[in-house]
Length: 267
Image 1 (cartoon, rainbow, N blue to C red):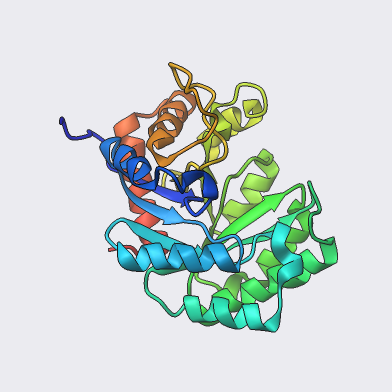
Image 2 (spheres, one colour):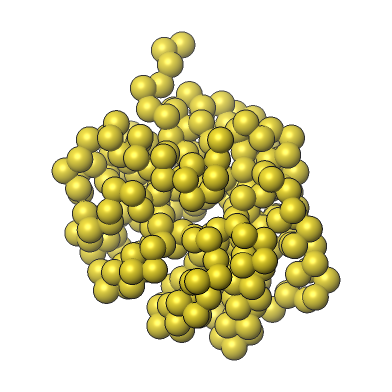
């Protein structure tokens, strides 16, 4: 087999999702064959955070993980869960706090609960001295205010799956945040504005991710039979970014990998 030309880091994949239970090993084989060397497994609640940590501890050369509660799951937050998340963050392979933040698009948890739990994650990140893996949808102002409040106490973070405006992008960059781009940028419908503004992300602040099994790139040809996204499609995000920014695929691969290593202190 010809080795892949690119070396990529997928900074956000939900591989603990049950859609991967039947073919997990094959998914990883395809990822590595496409050039994805490291996959950060996203924790979105206590169970997925624990499972992701287990994967990352068993194969630390391939997996890293995050630990936290997605804003959709904010209502589940308890002092016991907070303690369990804190224990997970003691492991070297658990490299970030989250997924955490605010989501006012679906309001699966009450907004005030989301705010309280997001602030708890910000405190955890300050205490653990680990970066944040952040989620924000239709909640920029309160999200930005809380992030700004704690910025001097945290080591940094990535606004994952960024889909917001140029003004929001400028706000996050002003706080020295990294910006995570997914297959949303490959969507000529929903991602049109994002395609226009990704060029404004500095080369030392850009990160790439699949958010698998979500956000399958619409630009894939031939079109996959399954709508499930997986890490092997990360290269399509890079290709689209290259088209949008006028930069080289190899250049973006090197820069985004260096950025991921810097933010998450990867060796």
